[in-house]
Length: 419
Image (cartoon, rainbow, N blue to C red; front, top):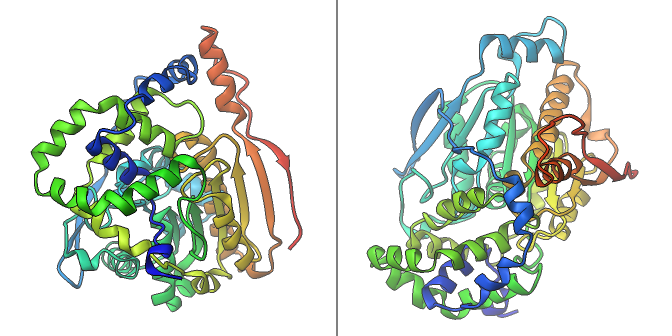
């Protein structure tokens, strides 16, 4: 297969950048007007999408790149309750630290809902911006590769969480980073990683962005036009800023189409668009090559003695469910949760549902470590779920009701499947 035929980068934000820059898709705003506007309005909140970390750190990698890290520390009471819930009389310092790793063109801001829920539940949470993203430093474009990111994650752990058990959570490229880390530091995984959540990610071996016409169009735009547009625009940031202002509705349309599969608040779409399009264009371009030929399937074997959650949206157009199936096939004890009406940025689209499963994962991982349970013999489980609680809230708000009772857990359409 030729290099060009293998070129299937993650393209959600890239498609938005190219489309906005090229001025295409002029009619898409009208199309969006007919798409569940009432439902989106019903979900609108006054959330300012803000969180104040307990600590901020700068981790310097071995090639000199400063990585921005934020640490959320729970209250003593919450940590004690969490420890006691795992094992009677357990100590808070025995609880695992949860490390969140974001995806391509995102930042640690994408984990806002998970950070709130996890720290409130009593767990210490570490989030970080990958090189070139968020508040982390930029680097030589040759370093924008998955293996380098795996080494960066190791640097974060070494300097911020040098001891204790770990639960690693990665979304999209963040999951790829974790697999690269596991491949490079297998002994550390065996010694300290008790839980792993891979959210909307891929181990490689399948085409990325093969989940629909828009994704395919975006990939083609990037392959044909991307380098010719991204590089000149990256050299003229003021021009790109003007283009963004002029094409605000178009960029929101592309972000919404590639990121979500159900109505979300307009404020959340804007929050997401600002995060995605806030990534420097030379970083966007620099990372594209790292997805060519990406394949970390062999690294999955390093996590077979870890409690693993694989979580993905059924309508994810960037890393469709087939990618998650490859992960589950390689890890016999993995729990696989497929969410209906969910896209690529599922942690923002269905946060309560993901939070509940992450808390279950952390609890199971901590309990297994405390009780010396051999998790490698756990049965494989697959669930297809619907976020019923969210649907009920949406219907109630649309009807003008404010009663918050009756929000049940996700409805499970299918249950356990034997290993």
